[in-house]
Amino acid sequence: MLIETELQLREIYGHAKGRAKDKQLSALERHSINFIDHAPFMTLSTYAASGALDCSPRGGLPGFVKVVNENCIIIPDSKGNNRLDSLVNIIETKQVGCLFLIPGVDETLRINGRGRISTSTAHLKQFSHHKNPPKACIEIRIKEVFLHCAKALMRSKLWSADAKLERSKFPTIATMLNDQLCLSEPPESQATMVARYQQDL
Image (cartoon, rainbow, N blue to C red; front, side, top):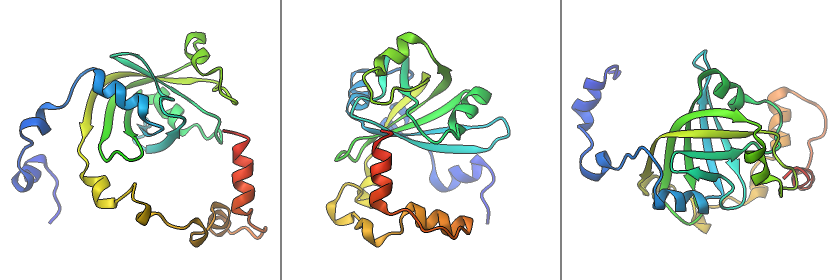
């Protein structure tokens, strides 16, 4: 049977209660700000006017996302491949969802809000010390913020050394792309790719 209505879902799962229901806030406070300040990694989810979805990883040193105030954060749009999927989606619909992670911490922080693309000098100067400063920033006005429990990361053992896969046992991105695109050129080695990427960080 396919589940097609919320009523059907609730018949199976019931409703959130207690802290799980009440934890959703409309603005940042000291714990969510502290989480962002320690997070070196996040994912950014957006969707286009067509309804097409996208989820993009973003990373930097801990605190690379800047807190303007309890209602606003700024994400640097670091140098990438110029696909601009997230940025185009934000221009079209403005809706964004963020998930922040801290290595060693199984809890995560979720933020939903409205985004816009900014080239404000005041925003960009916060990242002027970067080797490759961003050309633009993503400004997010917060609608919802809440902590997410540790269960998913505990199940995955994400931060456990035993869960890590030795990189040499997995295909390089060049090998995978060659296969996906039916290319005959020799694939770039992992070491060469890492050295090349280091120049763009």
